[in-house]
Image (cartoon, rainbow, N blue to C red; front, top):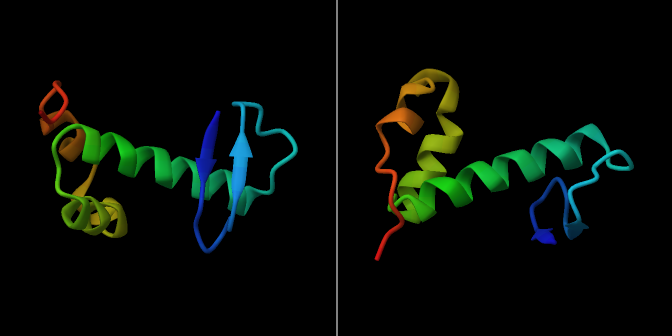
Length: 72
């Protein structure tokens, strides 16, 4: 179970079945999961937010360049 809070989806609890969610809610979940992966990989939360905001300009190479181990 994942609980996501954002402006697009103020409070969403999902068990992985997103068939009843709107496109905006699905996008909010995708963005939150991506940011969680960045932070979990050791990227500072502020940098993770910057990378999310500029994802199209930075490209997917950022994810491939991240360390594969969690922050300790």
